[in-house]
Length: 608
Image 1 (cartoon, helix red, strand yellow):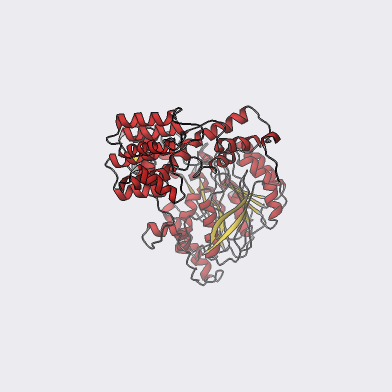
Image 2 (cartoon, helix red, strand yellow):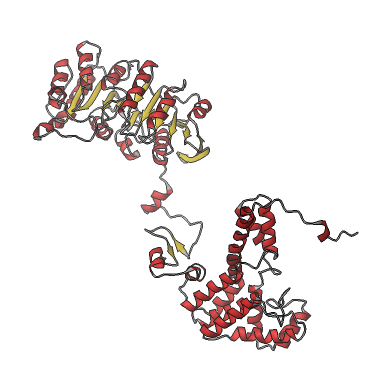
């Protein structure tokens, strides 16, 4: 591996398996370092294509999303780092696919628990093809002031505190990602900061070793000293011991191997990483520290003394003139996300939508303040849910049952009415459920099913003003307006609509008052004197009875009742009910595999 620098200020990466936070952290780091181009060139999200919106400083940018690794590499040939956030189940396959792309030089595998046999194959392929593999089980790496992988170094506050927005003189390598953050801070306190830091990962078989990166740092002129943090278990540190003994490393190395406390335990202990388990004396932290010390590395007597050893080594290099002080720069201010700024009380922002009927922010959704669990536990029905979401209150049971009866009675009226006919024709044209449903719903209006609100409005106005049925009907006639809720194509005085009778029977039994229905019946008596088919239809029955429900329940003011009728609540009841039937007609035509409908010639009057 050796060679030298693997990242620069021009490095661009492809990010596999979209994760918003680590990508945004990379972009924030780019902005902090004064980069002109975002380091994330593209995102690979299997099964998805398009763009993802993220922030680059204060500017919102769109990063391309690709479904295939090959397509992403082809679209972004300058991106040579592959950051793999896939799970341990699929990380190996996607990483191997990336390694085989000619444009990819570095692959970082974040997942831990990748099968060891798969990891060995990845390592063999990477080494055979002169590519760098970081991980598995890694947080990644960072070149100060230039490029970072995913969540490396944590938050922007930590990055600023560790002076990672500009390059220092220290090359750092560790197995642990969490301890990397700790050491970045330590190194920033006692030196001019790091130049590059790598966490190789804590699995038994890391894709690259501690010595791989130390030898690489040795070839980077800007790196003046190296800090190494190993851990008990495995023999990776001994490759560094050999490199030191053979004189391959010409710069000071300050090292410490964690896990010296393992000897205090009576039995063998598995520490956090899969590889952090001593397999004998040679793999103990004490043995490794001693070997590194004997090979020429600066090894303190304890972790507590690690910081002092780093400081003394750095100061010696400064005294020798090998390190020139790094001029401090003021990093730009990263704009705070609106969500976090609002949460911390720093800003206030207007909302874009107002909702008073439901709330999904808690542990469970609420309808008009009633938790979902309460709705189920109390055995609420569809009528109760409608009362909560439409009227924002829990109506008495007789009211919600009436709503359910209306829904049941209006669900369908056969295949010949205009709405059902439209839905059937659309379904037979091969259209989907929503298209078929909507084509039927669009026929609902003043002439079909949409007269409930008008019936309620006109009946209420006439009744409240004390008009006789004669005055009401004749007054409407003078205005050229048909009386809504009166008249039917096939029903008559001698063939009453059974739905109307059922609604009237229920109201007489359960409603405290049927004032408006009584008025509608008086109007019907007058209109039947004019024509046999001018009966009270289901629209008129529902419209007048709903007025009685609203007024008789005592839960609505006059203003609220007027608003309900004006907005169109009652037509909404017909739309809801008839949707059930229209959906049924769609399924019926699909199930019967009916062909495209064509209207017969004999049913058309062709005329000039």
